Structures are given as structure tokens and as C-alpha cells.
Length: 137
Image (cartoon, rainbow, N blue to C red; front, top):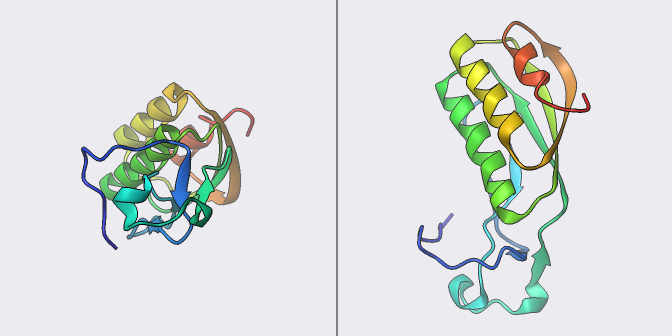
């Protein structure tokens, strides 16, 4: 899947209807691709674009290790940059690295969005710290 360059101009208002990014590895997160103008997406017409949603659901079902921590932070940061206002984090984790779990907690609490966490399986060990980052939960 082609990606836009880091310096590409984005409007923050619409995403191509046919472009989606899925993070690989233990974390499977569906999210809208970065917003692009028509010139950057091969001449797609405005009727082919859809607005960025206010509410997004993110699923994290993985051990808390460097790869999954970085993937979750990148996914949610991308959503914040697109203008998403409310993220529901569906969480299931057996735990993992304590330092990474505390990092996730701090990052999630610092984001300027409403974060609601849902336990959708087992949330064990340091996963509880990540779970407690949401309000409500």
C-alpha cells in the first residue's frame, strides 16, 4: 500500500474511502488513512472522500512488548492528528514489560482526546495500568 511523503499537505477533514492502514504484528488496528487532497491521491474526486469520524474503535489484543507498544502509540497518535475526538480502546493483554506499560499509560493520559477503555478478554499484570488510562472504563 503506497504511503504519502512525510511533508505531504493534509487537510485533516477527509480520507480516501478506499485507503485503509492495518498495523501488522500482534496488534490489528483498523484506522482511516491520513487525509490527503485530491492531487495527492491520484485525482480522486471529493465524492470519493469520506469525513474523518469523531469516534473510532481501536482493538489491542497483544502482549505489551516494544513492537506492539510503538504500534498502538502510532495508531492513536495518527487518529489524534486527523481530528478524532473520542477513541474506544478494546483491550486484551496478558501483560508484558512494566516500563512499556507505564509509557503507554502516560502517553494515553496525555493525549487531547476522550479515551474509553473496554476489557474484551483478560487484562493482566501491567495491562491493568494501560486499562486504567481510559476514563471511563
